[in-house]
Length: 295
Image 1 (tube, rainbow, N blue to C red):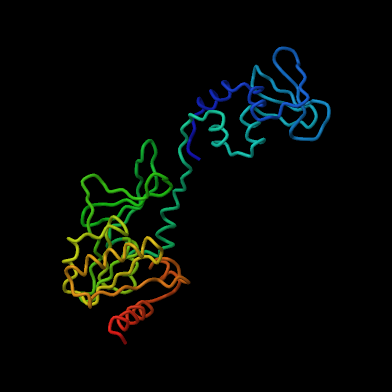
Image 2: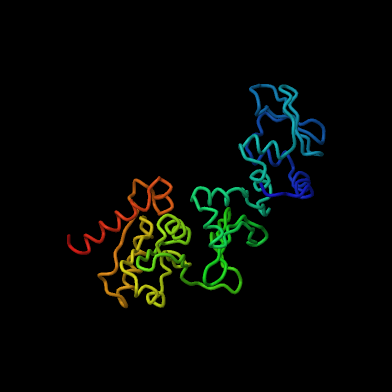
């Protein structure tokens, strides 16, 4: 949970009349007025017919003389609606801005789950940092592209990726084998595929639809050129576009397409994390080459 300052919490307690809140919750039942600063209602925390849950308007607190349950207006809402603390504050004050819940370990788990080796982290200048989005900082994996540093952001609904100021969209390159080129949908798929095969791997830094005509000249001397996008619908659309662009400048016989078998996941990080190896990757290439040759 993002930090919420004590003053804000106290303000919400002070400004929310507990009787009015109880009315909004629809829990006012068999009410009995107790002086000018309290009412008693049937308790919502235990069964009863005689009111014993007392709501104190001067403190916006409650106490049940039957079961002993006690608390403030925040607890009353939280227990009644089964909300966590920040959700309860938001219910009581819809204008409240609350920092999202962020797990700082998520970025580290991402690299671990994708099995990005220490060697690859060093080669591609991958490191952990934080990125400001609006008022909040989010855990981030930062890595270098030919156009500058790119951030993979975790826990932010607004965006997953951001380029550092001065960076620009380009073609990510791993280096490697000078004969076989593999074009993947994302940088981490390229890194993992390079890590396992040592083939020259590439990916547009703007995602599945980011392959530009100016990139095609990079592949003139490669054969085969393996287009290996994710196997979901977006990946298929991106792969189709990429192949169409390549064919404008390169002999189509050099271009093949492969996908991760669905049983093994969606992308190449999934593929290799399932225990598949360079041999398995090469078998997919060979199967596609046979189709290309009509064999």
